[in-house]
Figure 1 (cartoon, helix red, strand yellow):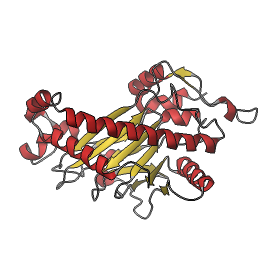
Figure 2 (figure 1 turned 180 degrees about the horizontal axis):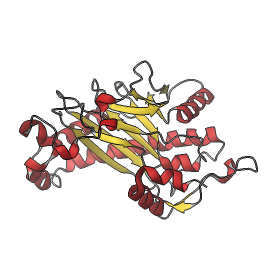
Figure 3 (figure 1 turned 60 degrees about the vertical axis):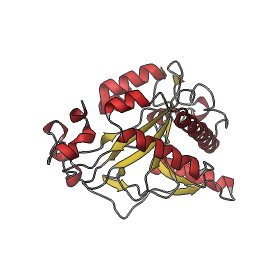
Figure 4 (figure 1 turned 90 degrees about the vertical axis):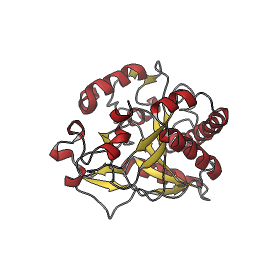
Length: 291
């Protein structure tokens, strides 16, 4: 089974399997890069709360992305969680099946990490709510009750100019908090016809708006398109915390944001139905969904 895994390419092939080669217009080697631009970095321990909120809203409107520092999640916990996931990804398939349920210490560490990320996510959503003029607890219940933690491993790629670690997409959730390994730049966000590399910052989290938050803000905040490129020399690990609503949660433009001069541009739909449409229709769904 191991020979079928993406992680085995580097050892088995000197080229990318044909099924993973991107069409010429999607290949990273043919893309326009905005290397002179970067996404904003926001210090959550800044002295001026109003300034923090303004920067978060401005970044979310213009980029759909920002990075946070001084976020309160202990560095030791982040490092230990990343180590556990790295050890897991290094196992063979059989070892993963056998060992994943036998490590109570690892489960405890990942559990603590999940709790910390939930608190951080709700803190950021509270600041976003205030910036939009909503109740600070607007996202605290069914709109954030089904989070998921996923660790990705991107192995070295023999031909990084031909394929992608993750294709161009928007996240179909409320908010994503991503921890990137230092010194490996792979995540890119699309803005103004070019891809902006998101440089890893030590002990920072990348925050990006999901499509559901774009709907709730009535299009004010951007669920930005992004992708992941590969490289030929170094594997990359990330930990993503996806803030999701419950499947029965109604996703719609927040009523306090609507008026006669600012009518809803999206209809109401449950998250479960929205996610089904989003995954089935891909990039065509957003245009169809607008009123």
